[in-house]
View 1: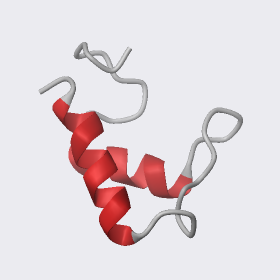
View 2: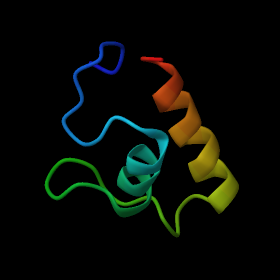
View 3: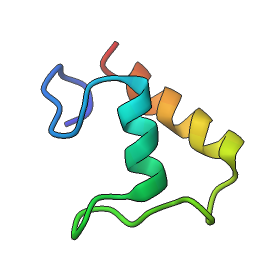
View 4: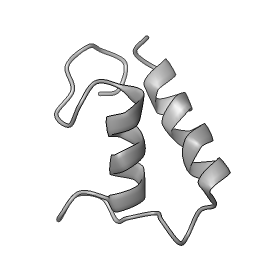
Length: 52
C-alpha cells in the first residue's frame, strides 16, 4: 500500500528513486536503462506524493 506512512524500503524521495533505478531482489525489476533519468525522477516523485 503506497498511500499510508508505512514503508518497507525508505520513506523519502531519494530512497524511492534508488528503488526505481536499482529494483528490489525478487520484488521489482530495475528500471535504470529502461526509463530515462527524467522518467525515473517523475515516477519517484509521483510515488512519494502518494503518501505525502
